[in-house]
Length: 200
Image 1 (cartoon, rainbow, N blue to C red):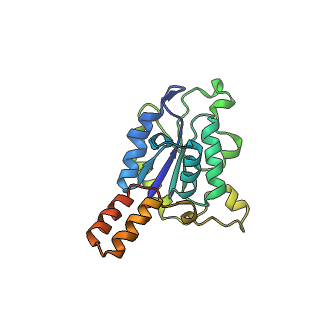
Image 2: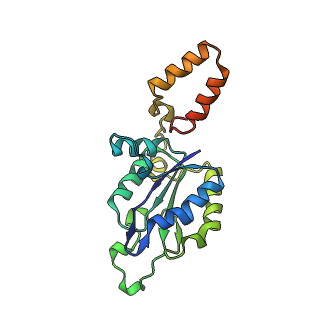
């Protein structure tokens, strides 16, 4: 199973989003043996937007941190909601400003106010780990649509992810050759190698 994480990077507005990733998100994913990360993990040459679009479409689970009014996060969340009907989970750092000092940028945007999200302590994100694990377990077991787009448009059909995961020509040729020669050991090694790619 694969996950794609949509979040700000570094320290923004006093929240260390890299710490949230390492102390909260990654341990929860490891509990379910889910692999994945952010676009920051994609090191090969190419267009990062294409990689992002592909991950938003093919990831079994997307976790979006909507703590800040971050245009990239909202853009990617909107794409996910338009492409996949389920398994998009929202996180948000608990607001620490007194209510009278909060501005519009401190509140959940209007379009997301009816969506469920898990609040975490921005200073101690790991304190929410057990709750997050329970919430992910429920999300993974549920067949409920969490995309507001798919809920609003009941006839909208999700795309077959396999159409968007091209296997490299070199890998296909290696598999065909090993298969033709009956090289079971080579096919086994290729199978192990395949696990490292999004199209696994």
